[in-house]
Image 1 (cartoon, rainbow, N blue to C red):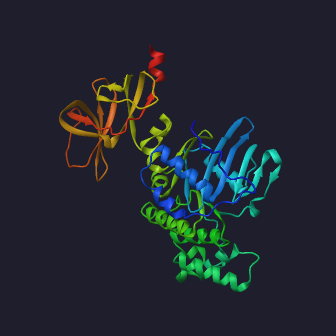
Image 2: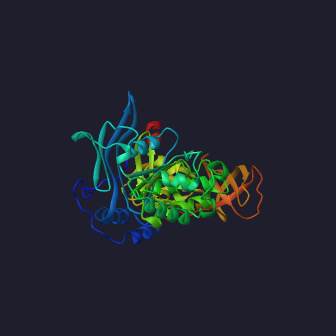
Image 3: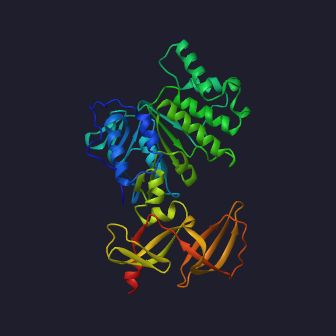
Length: 397
């Protein structure tokens, strides 16, 4: 298991040093090495850490829902919690929001401890300074758009409330809809109202529980971009729960992959995709096949070629990750037999059987038709070799 923690995280009473965080947000979308990510995050920790979760655990009788979770989110940063159904991602979000009590651990929000099991600290959800956007948006049907946004404002003057509502209506491009009711809005407009209501009291943190699920597929990419733009513009730290990989990789600064309640890896979308820490992350994120290989010296030998051995991999049998885009057809290459052809519109996905019986996939973007049974000469290009020890080979010996 991989989890992100640091001895430099902020604790209660610490004062964060101000820094130009947006520059880090831009850097985090570029390709970084694992060490670069850790260094960048360490700098951010000193600057504007807003969410700091330490050794958080939650059990339901004999079921472990969240196990020893550590994560941090900085101001203006979006972290996507990504995992299969039942992995614990929504439970973790509810623990941070204050809808559930953890069994162990600590949660610090905006430099204030809101959960500290060891010290019996518990701050109710309504006092944590956290905005929440639910999957169904939970708009009040008897209130207009402006009234829904105003609902989240407390302890402010009438003039301040009116000013804030007008600011958010303008920011969300909802001015023409201010006097409409929820049933008179499109799905995208309802989502923006829900986000505006969550942002109205200027919370340092916004939590989003699969907010794009109810939208039409063609609308989701646009809404993802709009929500990300607004959150970064306001400098709000956000955690997004999703099972949609495209969603997580497309808008997040960090992606946290969770399985059976444990964080498997935290990193930039590029690092999660190109440098997965476990074979689960490799197979869960994107499309990947695995071919057997043997690590000997500084090389790993497979039936599709000899490649540099990844660091820290001991000699012996391994399984090498092959992304679909790494496979191309090339005269004189390794012969592979077409087993299945799937037309996907802009590309054709072929499943190919290697001489050993192992299968890999090739994405063909040219209008070439290979029938089932046809032999395709292929070449695999691996600029960054990812391999994992193959325990099944050891057991079969």
